[in-house]
Image 1: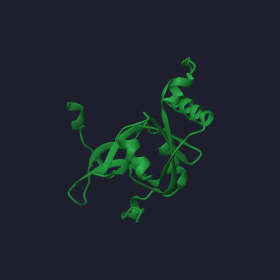
Image 2: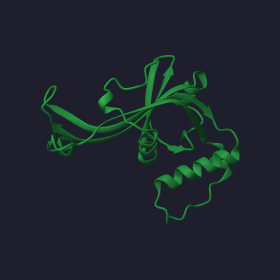
Image 3: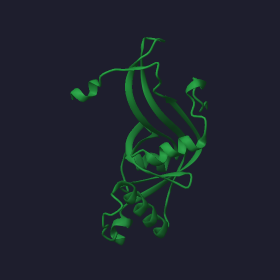
Image 4: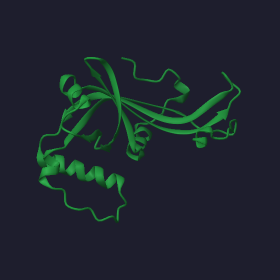
Length: 173
């Protein structure tokens, strides 16, 4: 499977750039294979020690798909403005994205599971926010999934002085 972007001029040059984007982005998109075909879902996640973690209920389409086939694709992106550009169709999108391919495995050890859930919570709440203790029952009824990354690629189109930023139409919503 080809994992490097076709446009070499837009390839993120270092693993550090890709890992920083994985650490700082809030929502990722998890793609799995079901009996009916591909399924993709947005998840909150944690990038920790080279793996991606997310939590879920103990059942559902995503969990059933992972139990049947652990192969996954995971995408994150940071979208910037649209810009006028003198190449192609004359308009381009500023963005950064990382695509990871790997295998999912369920975290079964209760201590590790609780630790990952606590790390995920800390990622999303202010550091000075007092967290209530997590009950054993909550840990037991939550699945924690680790994605072991087998390959990763990053792509970006950065804003340059050659671009003219267009007004944001999505703000009209």
